[in-house]
Every structure is written in structure tokens, then in C-alpha cells.
Length: 86
Image (cartoon, rainbow, N blue to C red; front, side):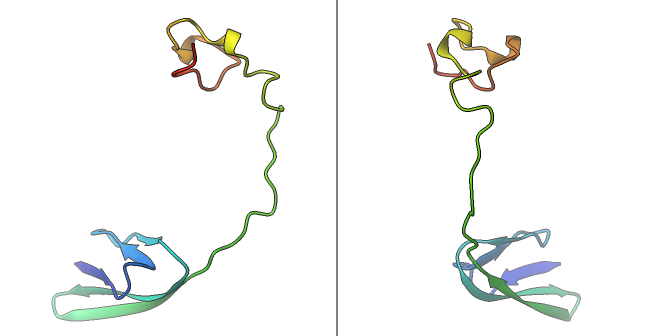
């Protein structure tokens, strides 16, 4: 099976047919195999993010002192990321 996009600047398609939106616009994705071809119209739209919430507020559980000296966060329970924090 061969996959293609008419507008890779808007939508790309992988070798297994996974379509990925790149920018707002329109494209056509085609699939071809053994002399048969199918196509689908794709419209990519940008949807704005309405809100972002962080819970708990940054700093309550994510303190630099919670990171082990070697930055290996896997041994801590309260820190989700320590790499590069000393």
C-alpha cells in the first residue's frame, strides 16, 4: 500500500496511513494498492486552547530540594521531573 498527501505542508501521511495535521488548511490523502486507489479530503483546523490549569500550583510539591543530588527523580514520590535541576 502506498500513501500520499497532496499538501504535506497541511497534512502528512505515514507509510502505515497515519495522518498528522501540520498546519491549518486542506489536503487530500490517497491510498493505492494493486491498481486500486482511494482518497479522503482532510481539513486541518487550529483550535485555540481555552484554559490551562496546573494542580497543585507549581512550587507546592515541585521544590528543588525534593530532587536527589544526582537528579534521578525515579526515587522520589513528589517530583515529576528533576533532570538538570541541582
